Image (cartoon, rainbow, N blue to C red; front, side, top):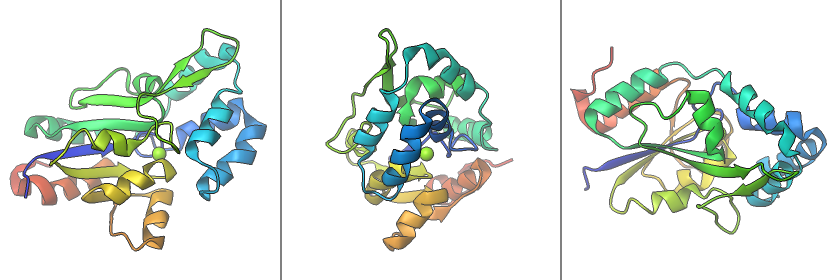
Length: 218
Ligand SMILES: [Mg+2]
């Protein structure tokens, strides 16, 4: 079995304490969000169609306010402590958001040490309405996290997530660390996962899986 690991971690509701992307969509496109978000949660509308319709209904003039809103989002406990340990162990840790990569940068004040890369949608706000793009599109998702996983053939994969944007990735990864709606989707499908509430929990799980006792948890 490969001893190479890769960790793919969601952002909204996973690294952030709250479901920040949904909160932003609901604030700047309330009517469409109220109509389409429940359909995405119950898997009757694709993430691609739902997120695209909502995001591209928002006027570009609101983009700075969206960035400001995300920049004060509370981060789940233990995140930076976990990154220090992973960085010392040279384990790739990728953030892949079903939302906007620039929102992640705004919330984390750049790319913290220990984060290998940040992937997500990009936003063009030069026209009257937001235009969305993504290098990781699939038929049903704007950001197909599975497409990112495919770039690490042979590595043992760990998914950390909380909701519907993580479901396809979670079904493909060797290990799943889940909370929130993702736990329910996985339980409904009889897929095993490790539950977590903060990144101290994640660190303990990673310690038992990856480095044995070599991860130093303070
Ligand atoms: Mg999420």
